[in-house]
Length: 358
Figure 1 (cartoon, rainbow, N blue to C red):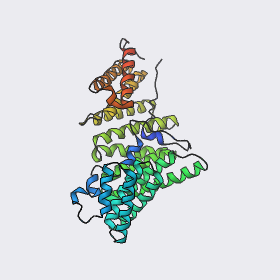
Figure 2 (figure 1 turned 30 degrees about the vertical axis):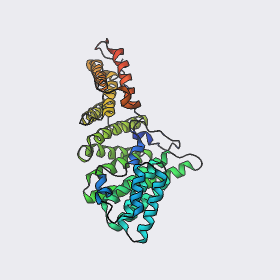
Figure 3 (figure 1 turned 90 degrees about the horizontal axis):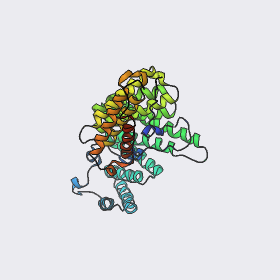
Figure 4 (figure 1 turned 30 degrees about the horizontal axis):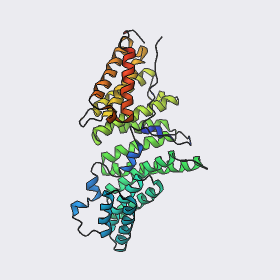
């Protein structure tokens, strides 16, 4: 009798999408949702940020220069106080650009310290200042971070009126990502278009708008290789696999097709993930994840693969072990080490197995 296993990865970013469940959902260590929040700027952060050292401190408030030094020393409370003083002085001097630079640093610091409500307040201020200066990069950036922040707040609620407050955060997240998509399309900024589609997919999934979620995540996966780094392109494939698992769990696999269609889609996505993750510098954990899940897909593929499922699974587990051997187990982190351990166990279990249908 054929066996078909539903691939269920709940450790990705999309594990945050609660479908109305008002309890906190933890993101897995490999995809660290907080990492999304702490990186306030994209790859060209220094250009957007107005690198202080590049300006040789010319015309900058003393408090901002002091704050930079305190940040380097990780003296965060003192740095925050100095930055707030710098914002006040810049405001008195009508220096909007300096206010913006300081607010970017303040927002990043609040996010680092997980002070989410304070970060949201500052991000709204960044949006206001960026509009005054007509700096569209910062406007896009603020929308993106506000959307992610509201999603984070929606999944971390407890206490009274959780569902009402959660709905409010999800509404605000949707508005931020929709605004980002509209503006980034106008600017032909593919990076932010791609990120907006991901954010809208996450929000739609949280609201159980399955078709909308699948459409936006599909667009995100399609654009990612051209608009983002290989690491993020690999992560996009991982996110889509997470979403597919959620769709199947909620009986929405029909959006993709038959069980065979879903199987082929998952295999295709995991191979794409592996290809992107292998691009130097290698995204090791994502590469291990891709091969491990391919092994699982093949091992439990049953009649989908006829006689080649088990041998192919064995090959995938071997790939996990080969990648793992290149690194000290401790350097792979909890998630990476777990993939290696599970692959070793699975490989041993089927090493002498036959090639018959599983």
